[in-house]
Length: 93
Image (cartoon, rainbow, N blue to C red; front, side, top):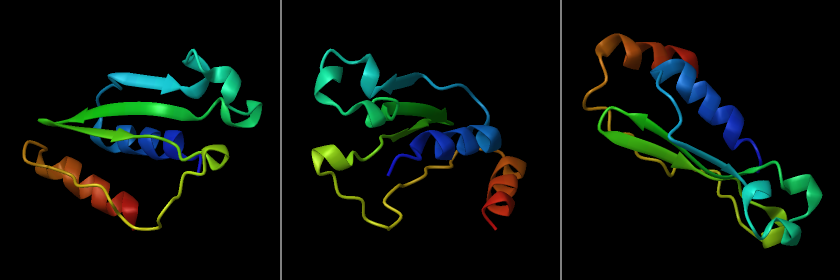
């Protein structure tokens, strides 16, 4: 919980591109309802990868969000060149 930014910076280093959206809980009108120690966390982040967009959010303990340790993302790698995919897979090992 709370390492979405680290993960997405990693994905960006592998796939390249720029975030099309990055919003922190502190950027919302409801920020006063979020504990100060969680306001820096990401409410939404989006990174285009080919024709797909990888999106994520941090799970907040204060909101009783549950995090399941399972890969629940689906990557559509249709337009990513072979060397980018190879670099990604090597970085995961």
